[in-house]
Length: 224
Image (cartoon, rainbow, N blue to C red):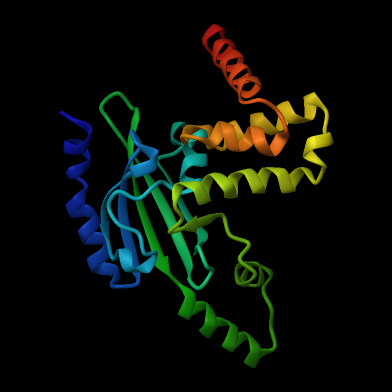
């Protein structure tokens, strides 16, 4: 059975989840064989503005890179925002696997909780209380961003890693640059076309340097 045929079996489930949660619930299915055009089904796409043919998110990609599916069947109740930060979402991802246990797709549920959080903050103001996690969400300290195009996702991953290091990338040592390349690889940035050149420009190295590093890593993995 072809991958899309297998994933199509989950389309009615996506419809069902959306139906019982209402118009504030977006449900979509990703085909992980093509990260740049992974969305093969979506219900209530108005929430994030995404459509069929859209790309995977940086966080979903990171889950796959870290092979979270080997330890659990799903990752639930993490927060995310739309690209411009006007909506806050409570999200969950279910790993769709084939008969061999290989991940072929993702069933993702994103519930818009923006209005609920506003009401929560209003109640907090009345009660003169404060919760750190609500404050963090309001400041957009979330784990996932939606409705971004591929270039935006690549740029976001690169910026996230480089900012965490807080150093002058062009003046950093070879060892530091290799560490940064490794972290970007772990987040799946090199799964996207053109990402190698983007990272090379940021780090001030040749694209061949990055290709050699990735090849060596691949060889070590095969030998292990």
